[in-house]
Length: 44
Image (cartoon, rainbow, N blue to C red; front, side, top):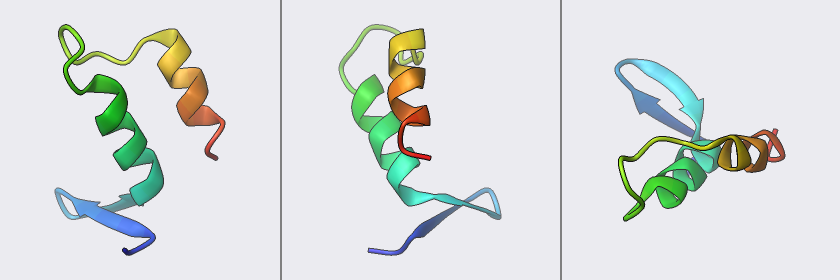
């Protein structure tokens, strides 16, 4: 697996994209909550 994932021509951190996808999967409207955002920031 690559460190980066390209979305709309921009390189993004793959770990953060993967975690955000998991956090929004099958949970309501797909928005990221404050709690989820704090988890994502812990990956930086």
